[in-house]
Length: 417
Image 1 (spheres, rainbow, N blue to C red):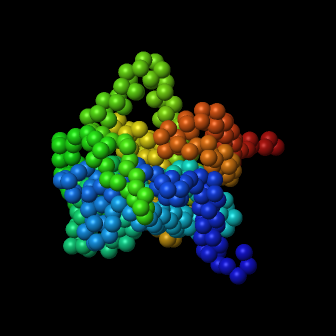
Image 2: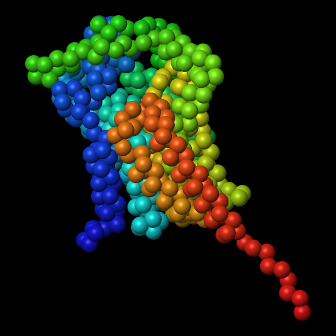
Image 3: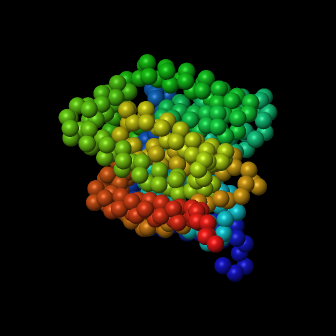
């Protein structure tokens, strides 16, 4: 657009992508507001007024500063600020990753990432999820505190982060700790990163261990009453114990014979498909895929594999698997943007254009209100759509393989004289 710099055009594209996803995926919930579902909103209202409660720190902090932690208006405003903040982090990460690429190549790649149920879609579907707040705080802390390398600042900041995240939502350890571990082990490999990882692990592990040993199922009657003006609403579901969640999930996966195993495989595939495709697309377009790989290509691929694998244990005690893989994709993109040197040149692999084309097609197929419960089983929520996406994946893989084979150096036979 004339008069706009390339960076401003990129940000405008990201904002329009978010608005497009909102038009398709935005939902009204309590009191007909475009706010969080009652389940997520209840997390902001839980506190310690009736004694210690799992995930009660957030509401306690809101009450501590004198605000009403049961106000749905306040919860909605805070939830939108967090979701928009995470969207901005994602746009900024993609800008930093693609600014050395061609302008249209960068924009098309980023649109394929943004217009997806695994990125902007999940932020809207799980609006108000306290994990979004934790991830936003972590990503900002990792970007601005870790590079300081001052251990007197890094250690206490990440120790406090470990306390906050484990008391706000214990599942956060499966996102933050693997991301910090990857930075320490693979990407940054410096003392500050190891200090941050150790400090966060030490405090969060203690809290999570206590929660696992003491947690009991809570009756729905213990849920706080949310209100908007004179109208009130109480979430009727219960915050179950870890033992019950584990037993339920194991029975569903392994206690139903062949069909249970088949459904488990389908759910895992449906939850992972889009995040894995988008992650590989970004790696192929930004870093390339040489054989043998360069050091930065190896680090990008290993980091992606590690953070994805780290989510699997969480699947034993929770149902919404696609939500976890979507969140870790956002964390991965921001982590790679933070740790990729500014002077690193883009080295897209042959066939990466096919990856981007497949990503654009995938965005069009999956940005639909039919995937209104994407967070649970991903594409498996709509099996026919999942089958269509599998065809897109297969065609994309075929195009990439053909492109690589055609670009391989051909041996020329010696001419006879």
